[in-house]
Length: 118
Image 1 (tube, helix red, strand yellow):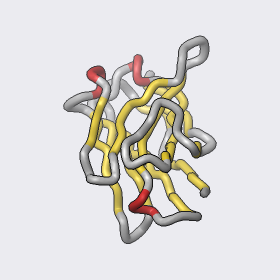
Image 2: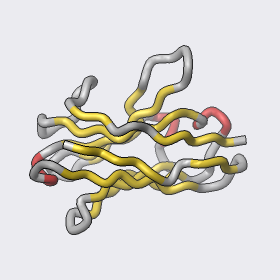
Image 3: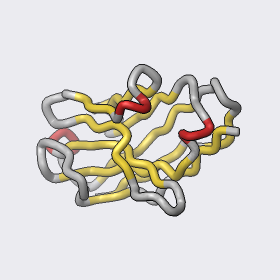
Image 4: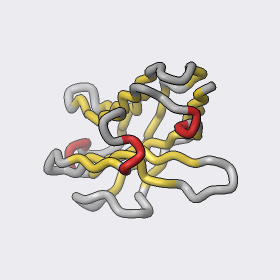
């Protein structure tokens, strides 16, 4: 299983970014998928997940600003991030879990993409 993120960068507060994650190596729709982020000195946290039944979950701090989605035809996971805040600055990781519902420690990780809001 391979997960390759793209779309990170530097953006001003209030701006938007869209992260993409190309997924390969398994039956795409059978795994739950999600986005996590990590700031130096803090634990990696789950930001948004989408389970195999299509249900989505977000952490409170991004509700109403971030949207997770997937394109089954392209085997791609997205994270649309709007109204970005400096506290959203982190390395964002794409993750895949063999369970139909995302767990705290997914089975597979991407290499991460830096998002800086400043």
